[in-house]
Amino acid sequence: MPPRIDHYTDVSREQAVELMVDLHRAVGGLLSTFTKSNYRIEVAALAMSVLTSGGLWALIAASQPTAAAWVGAIFSTIIAFLKFYQLTFGPKNRIKEAYALYQSIGKAIAGLRGGGKFNSMLFWDQYKGFEFDLTKLENPAAP
Image 1: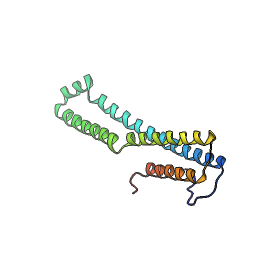
Image 2: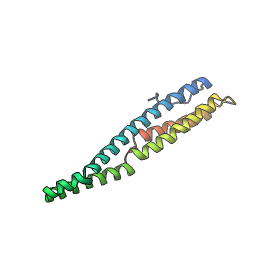
Image 3: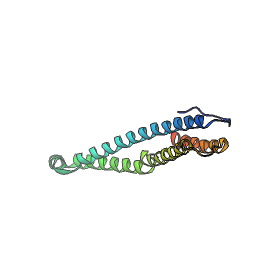
Image 4: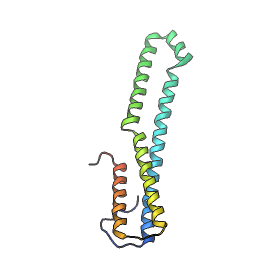
């Protein structure tokens, strides 16, 4: 996580690029974390789906019908909750938000490196906006 800067200071273009690159790396790290978490949830849901379908389940249901019905209902409910979590509060939506922020910061870095007129105050406005978005990604429950 890049250091939080609480005040506006006059920075050079090179310093601005360094600050943005640090922010870009922080978002990239979050994106990686969210992607790994999403992958684990998808693998768990897939494994449960495989266990509750097909010939294996038919064989278990034939020998222990009541127990198989209960286990199937429990697995089915867990799968439904995993998918619901993944699509609402889980990492899938946060991946989209992190990727959009990652791209925006990358474009800002390209703009800074591309030359043209550099305005320190405009940089800080943009940087603070990105920093706020990063804070929301790190802690979505924060106001």
